[in-house]
Image 1 (tube, rainbow, N blue to C red):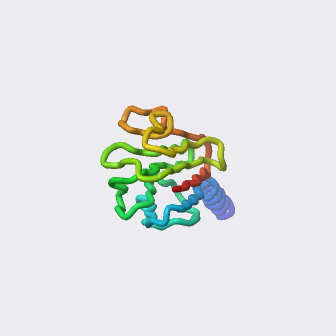
Image 2: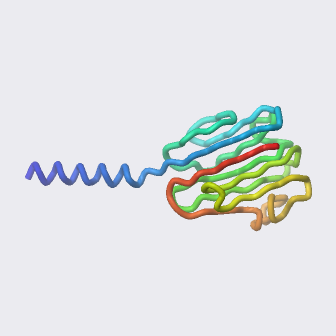
Image 3: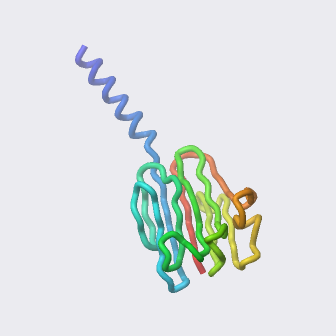
Length: 148
């Protein structure tokens, strides 16, 4: 009986570790301004690469002095074990202040906003500009964000 209990615990531990997601985030800022990446539940970071264990829901990155991206071009994203998505937002109080681009899962999909008139296919100007949103399916998603 003890062997069965040990085997059951071992199998459960293996299943739990196999289903835990891990996501790669790479933020490059060539603008010369501060960079803030907010990852709810995981903290705030600057530019650079990091791996986050667990899902990231409601992340936002911007290359400006306002931590919330007010007055800035911002990239919003969620990296979830299943469906991950991202978009460039220019919905007020955000506004275009420099170029931004992103790709999901090593270039499978992405968007670029090079000027204030890049939307609605590349950036949200209002909450119903859904053609600006990109998504990928699968576990362990990654995002690469570049400003300027």
